[in-house]
Length: 611
Image 1 (tube, one colour):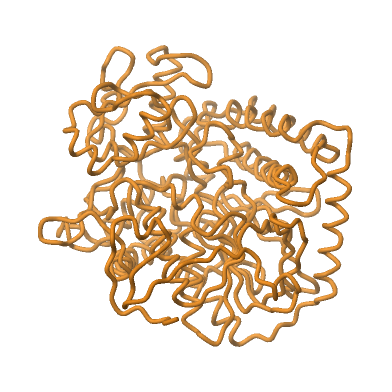
Image 2 (image 1 turned 90 degrees about the horizontal axis):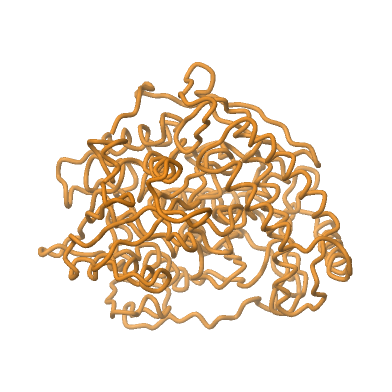
């Protein structure tokens, strides 16, 4: 099989099918989840990437440029199912294509302002300078951008951006990106270890040994030695369970494992609530909806954003629009009650052919889940947990290295920090490409000059401990069911650590999460089988989410100000004197502690945000 791709011709649907035409050769993933040499523990990887979203795929592709290294991607699903595939709006980058007046400085400033000045500006400047280049790189790979009449890709303006800089494919931008990267990884002989849940990253005497995981198909517990690891496991939106745009797989696994290693969770309180999730289930309706001209209406048909952001209107930053929606609902200008209270998003003034060309998925989701034809009537929407601006602390944005030698982090599970307190729409896909590249290059360089010095006996001992734990927790006949713990956690997080927060509710949330952690220690799983034991997988994931929730509440309680996605009713103003700094939450055993780290400021001094 050829490993070189010199030119590419796409047929519609080819990417989605996992098949591409490349230099006359077909590449197709066969779906083998655990290679035999991995099952037998007879392979040591140079670079092991945990997570198969945009950051993981791009990192693998970059690491595989060194054909002397053994590179693998491990995922708890199949490789092309991740939160990245659900991203809809596009990828920001200055290219000079649609708007020749756009500049990398404008992109950097929009990002810093949008992040309410909590961004590390040196990292933002690097990101803005590089983002346009990865858009062209994806074009070369065959990414099927929406095109202009002259054949060049089109870019649209997203919320908080001063220029049209988001290149996109319809409203399925992430789906196309992941499939394009996957095809390239197959061509470069990257190995995929699929349907395999990470349980622990093992480190002994300051030396990385590898990963312990469970093969979901067989129930076998496996140990995988590796020289370096890239954590690219995405976010943790399922901490809010029903009110999230995230897939069921977004359970904070990588962040939880990183904290166990001693890597701090940076800015955990900075959770982004997307303004426009479907009222019934929180499923995302892309920001490209508002980019293409959709209005937000109260129950009487008024465009209420005029009260909150009179210039930007619906294209104000996500945190501002989200708070505006929640205010409308709380003051009685919404529809419905409880978790399903909502306002409207209105597309009726947009030509249907334009909706179908650029917002086909939005149309389908609205019809499928709300029974609404958006070309004829407005659709009910409400805020939904969408993104983590925080994540595992990255020590150096030029390498994505963490405090643990040999361990790197990229994508939503990391905090570089370029998003600060609020991410701009279409910056996430650009980020995974930019810093996935950096992570892959850095991990490959580390592995190339490092001998494997891990302890195989310790690694296998850890695997055996997990097998014993499986037997113990899955054979319990009493205890609180995992699903009850999950639902109570989500209720606590939405109502007491959601869009709006205050001291009283955060203190209540802290006590409730602690109580749930106690119940979790002896909870009821209810399935002792080995093959596809999803009940055990849920048990692992809820444990990770409880740890994540604890950190979110700790960070939110300590930050006595309002900034970006973190909004305190009892401290409604931003406090640059005391909180122009990053929160770092460490986990030591069962103890959590909080420290702070200064924000890097280069040229953009903090000032009031106005849109």
